[in-house]
Amino acid sequence: MNNFTFYNPTRIIFGKGTETRVGIETAKYSKRVLLVYGGGSIRKSGLYDKVTASLKEHGILFMELSGVVPNPRVSLVREGIRLCRENKLDFILAVGGGSVIDTAKGIAIGVPYQGDVWDFYDGKAQIKESLPVGVILTIPAAGSESSTSSVLTNEDGWYKKGTGSDLMRPKFAILNPELTYTLPPYQTACGAADIMAHVMERYFTNTQDVDFTDRLCEATLKTIIANVPLAIAEPDNYAARAEVMWAGTIAHNDLLGTGRDQDWASHKIEHELSAIYDVAHGAGLAVVFPAWMKYVYKHNIQRFVQFAVRVWDVDQGFANPERTALAGIERLKEFFRRIGLPVTLEELGVRDDRYEEMADKCTMGDTFEIGGLVKLKKKDVIEIYKLARA
Ligand code: NZQ
Ligand code: ZN
Image (cartoon, rainbow, N blue to C red; front, top):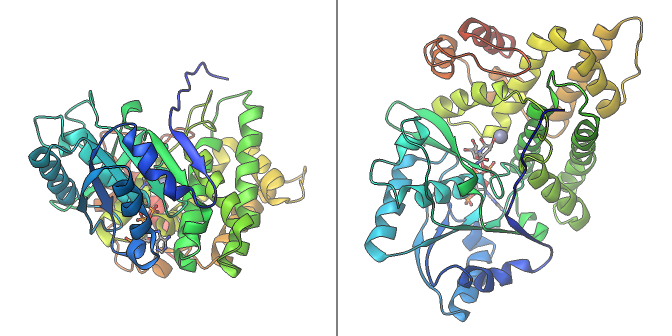
């Protein structure tokens, strides 16, 4: 196990009806708030009315920034920064999913910074300061509610990039599984793929003696595998929604990554897909992850055998570990299919082949290798896109 520091100060407020606590929690930090949300699901579900009532009840002045889209754009973040500066707002409240939270985080780091906020995402500036952010989560998926990162898309060139800092962890995250009843099945499934990907990016490591976190990873994956089909079949099954929601936060608050090297190649490869084709991040991962696995499994076959046996209950074929490893990858694909996700680029609707361009972007013109389990160059990334094709 590697040395590590683990610090996650996000206060998690979990359970039925907890969204009504938003006024009390926000008032601990500020009375001048920017409320950020997406395309309208929170108005349709009635959550907007509850949130604004709670803020008013606690004497909080708020302005609104709506219209965050999936694969959120830096232009809206710039708009939020302007609103905060002009109106002296010093707390950002995100009500929604990863896209809304990442927009809120971008605004929070952008307000105190003199330059353009994209500098942080482009690696040109380090985050030294952030306004506080609070969250009401409406979709278990990205894990941004207690993660250190924010991922944005720059329309100028269609780059999708992330930035990170401990300063960006939200102050609180309200998680009420009831708020996820309105999720369409496809969004529930995309969320599941993202949650699983966050676990697998950490699970597939060459670091030795990480048995405890291996088993936490396996338990998290099994929880998703058992509960997501239930949540899709019965959208208001509280027990299933609650398991998925808590697993989604744990998957990405970095507890599971403690003491080990991590991979993250699949995320980088996927981000290029959602940047150019505007596909849902989770759906892109359902396509990329199995292809990445097929490309790299021979480098650490034992780990892929462990994944197959412990997560998917594949019989351990001692005489043929390769067959066992491949059966695990196949079960993952079958699961994605079963919950209605695409598993090939064709099914994702990506029919042209801008592989060269995407591989170039994610390896910064082949100057940068991606991945921890196996270091990948541009040519490897192209091969992975090809493996994912059909
Ligand atoms: O905009 P509205 O109307 O709210 O609709 C959203 C959106 O269309 C809808 N939705 C959310 N909650 C709902 C709901 N519809 C009905 N009922 C509800 N309760 O779902 C759609 C997707 O929302 P989005 O926020 O885009 O989903 P997600 O949470 O999957 O976030 C994806 C983004 O997060 C980034 C991804 O790259 C992607 O841009 N990520 C952020 C990470 C981080 N900051 O730590 C890590 C991840 O790996 C990921 O990269
Ligand atoms: Zn992700």
